[in-house]
Length: 188
Image 1: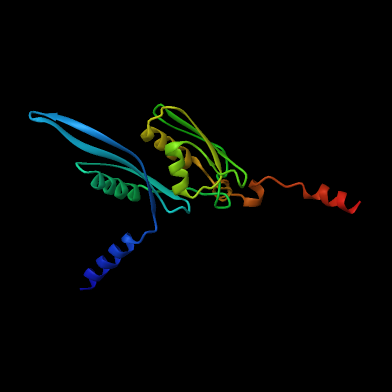
Image 2 (image 1 turned 120 degrees about the vertical axis):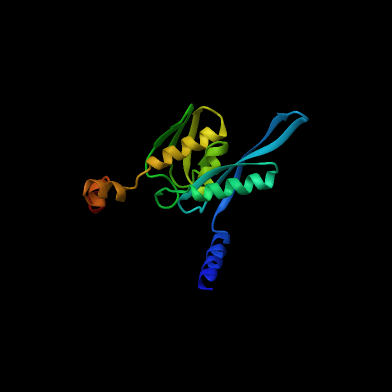
């Protein structure tokens, strides 16, 4: 009995809409058989919690809604966590690539918005990034663009992670601000 309740709780938790999803692409694919053609659909979906977690998935089925459902489930299983600066942008500039797809992502000041095209924009929106400048060079295939974007985002590291890896304090890692000369000028 208790085991059944645990399964029900887990199912209820999975159904809570904590993740937003974005359909990036749908392809109609056909298979030629003896009697003609059989059509199916392939869906590409990006899922994220808009707080630093994102994933993508692919699904294929005879009907579009089933393909989207499969892709969404796969995306939820393959999520990665990305550290964000002030919860709105990247900590540093990044390059990512997958196959012929290459992307460059740059940190941006507040108010810039998401300057990125197509599939990359979907990844940034689901991740919760508000300010970023990104450029895709090479492959325009949405699958490769998303994989290249996620490859770059995996390389993202916060000052806290760098400090822990180097055995230093976060204050030692971050650049010093020159507040002292400004304070002296104000006094004079």
